[in-house]
Image (cartoon, rainbow, N blue to C red; front, side, top):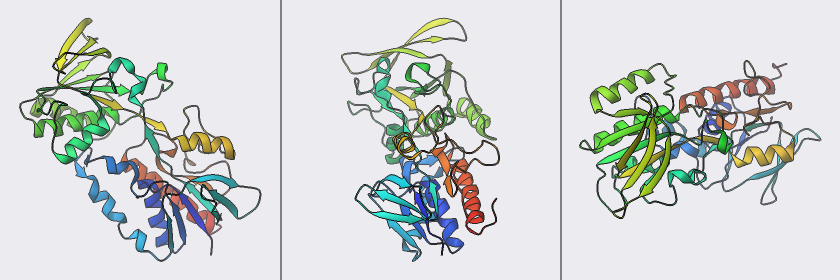
Length: 341
């Protein structure tokens, strides 16, 4: 029986595992942390319909009990020997694992907002990231550093994306719709709060995203300002003063707010950068793994039997990640059955 190793226990790795096990293939699933689920665990609800993230994860709760699954938690792969078949993977704790095919589903990491010092993250307590706001939404308890419900909140789009100064010139694709989702969720929890979204351009690419954006304005009175934040400072009472430019009217803007939420973008994981360098797998200019092509081989690598799944190749929504993982699983199955050229 062919041996398959999947690196990464996030939503992509779980979906690929589910489909391969369903076809009767034994799978070794390797996850560097102590739990499965990856980045989806950071979200309370998913856009555009506010589905609880737990509903998605429920599809995989039975996987650890599958007799054909070998689950290795707290394990990292440091090197792969491609010199002979089957391939051999070497972990950080000295384990050697044999594989006829390997699926890399190592996901993404969040941009480090401290690199944008002018926004004040890590300097002022009232400046948080979208990941931290999501945790407050999950707990249904949104408070300022001084323990009060914020009366005014500003969401700042494109933090670490579309920004040549930090080296990320690409769009992370999900920040705009996530800001709108979080703004609506915040308004539901804090009906009296004023909520502003500062954006460069609103990129509502999904079928119902534009509707959600319009609904945020009409039903929740969320206000949108086209302009990039230039500076944040803190008052003695811990409230924040932000400076920006309203680029629609061409005027500078100064606003006092109780909380600043930075919509941090998606970056290639350190694994993809370091692993590709040491193992000869190609990465693109932005650090994500580079597939064979962007059309009909988005899950294939340049090496035989090596595949990519999900956001290891670039920013994707949860739905897109699952769909890409399904396509990768199909390609892997075809390859292992000898049907793929």
